[in-house]
Image (cartoon, rainbow, N blue to C red; front, side, top):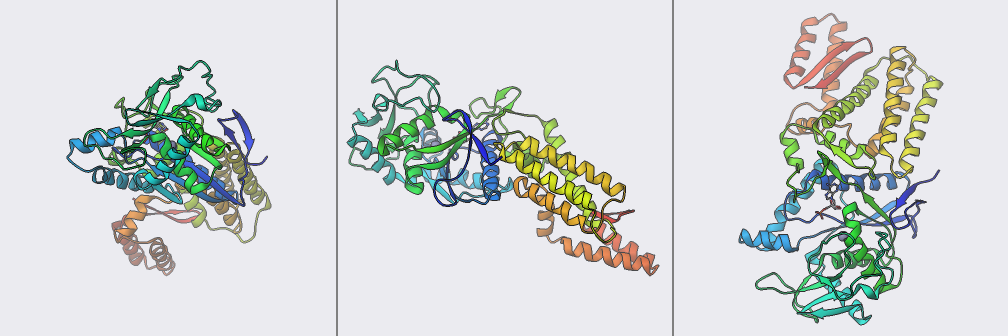
Length: 471
Ligand code: AMP
Ligand code: ZN
């Protein structure tokens, strides 16, 4: 079956294809940069990275826009406390966000759009809404009148027919099922940062930020809009109301939402104080690959319960895959190909693809890989592998890793950067040692082993040949 996603809008699994050419036009809600982002947030961003990679694996190109919310109530309050401009304040956390994202190997979207650099498109969208009679002003602020959009509630599947007309909120986030006219433009208060517009001095609300930027980069109807489940209402409901009120066209065809990461059965969140940042976990000595793997391993529509035991368990899973890779590379194999192994390898790829096509079922995709690795380790034990099967198995690992991206250890990349030995140098030294042993020059062989050990590389002589790993 072809690629399909669960669409929050229709509440169904639907076959996916992009509307224009071969390019998926996708918008995801990015971070609010008032602090370090926690690993709960990164669960959602990791899901988006897996989504990107799978779309590309399926032959599509991407035009993906992610916003960075760099002006909001919390940012203004925190910057004022530190006597900084909001630009100086948010620069630190924006930089930290992209450093953390890179450590987790999250690909950069094609466009990263900071809100404060797009005030003009937001002001323009508000003017269009005003011209259509969807807004009103009160005390200098402009509000969206939700009674002007009869389909309000269609994403969150709430019935808002009994809403109190005229009740409004100034904050960007509010309770579920409490639909109120929301703020599009907030009048300037005291010395807050503000921008000049024909409808007054002030700053944009959070919801208009995403509608306006999404449409300005991607056009009126996007292929995919994604975020965490907490954004379904009110944020994404409001985005639909604003965008569709302007264009009269569907704003996004597919709405994908990631469930939350929990810790001790509670949503991880800054306000509850029960969070870990990526930096916290790296300082405790966990590998970024293990964290990435853990965040990706539970299908995105299921809650993920974070525990340190699971983090340790996935580190072992990665180790198993790396050991298999190493064993494959160093095994001494007879020439030729065992067709049974080749077929089992193709089957593993088919199972992986089927699982990923099924709304990114990462758990099943991983199960397919681990069953395969178990079978192939037996294949190696029982001497059923031949030289050309090396490439069959390498292809399976390659397919796995172009999505999960955990096989190469960033620890070893750092060690290489720090001036220790590269893989090529290690292999050359191992060859030299084997030659020395053949020539019965055991002193030389021991000397090479010692030199490698000093550089943090351990050798193991096995019946399949020499295996090595970094300490
Ligand atoms: P924020 O910076 O709060 O706007 O959140 C950025 C993204 O992280 C949004 O898509 C949120 O839905 C998502 N998010 C927030 N908390 C969690 C959590 N505990 N688990 C998964 N995603 C989350
Ligand atoms: Zn958004």
